Image (cartoon, rainbow, N blue to C red; front, side, top):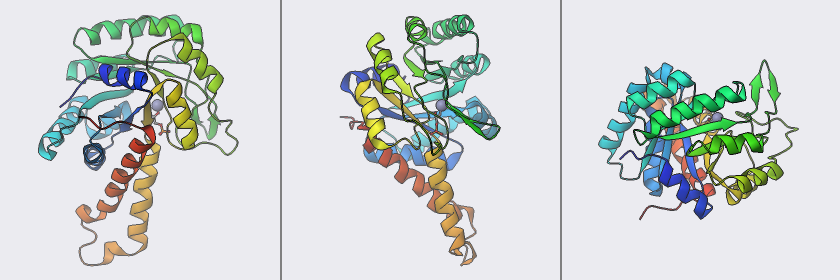
Length: 286
Ligand code: G3H
Ligand code: ZN
């Protein structure tokens, strides 16, 4: 059943483990993430970006799809239905649509405005028992072909945002969305320590794909409780699909049937999600 993220991630921070947050894009992604979590018997967070929700239909459709797949698949592990990197309107729409968790990402607003809008979203969401993720600093990523390093989260700003009662906080600590460049400097553990010492709020590591395992594990020990993964599943899906086509399997028998053509990629997502759950040390539910 759907649960909010508060208890799951508070327990994760106290227990020094993390719970994975995986982005969905369609039916196959949704099933693969749910299947992996059920096979590992661990809680999981399924998140949708504004772009992916638009691609699939709308926020309501995504929530209904996840919910109905859970019913059909007999999913028994706790699942958090989360909006990833939402703007103000999207966060409000998902609170209305019955998500159990929303991210309001106001990092590119002037800080006072990020603070004010986050406060509003926290009030609206908490009135309905919905958890909220906010962001300070920024996550690097590609823009016009140039990979930006992102801006480190300011500890004072993080304290002010945390004091609003946000349930988990995304902070820039040198992490980057998508693929990491060759000359990447690694996570900034000094800043992570300052943040973790300053606030008890579970911290979120965005851009989880492509960070060396030992850095992820170290960050989790220090206070990261939610790790966001998107690109890793996309690469696994693309790779398995390419192999299927390159081997000419789509030309054998009815290999072009989408139910066959998409199967290896879907299974690759299941395997990737299960492997990441192991990395994160998410304990099985009792
Ligand atoms: O919000 C989503 C994540 O931060 C995904 O990042 O695509 O680098 O795994 P990633
Ligand atoms: Zn992100």
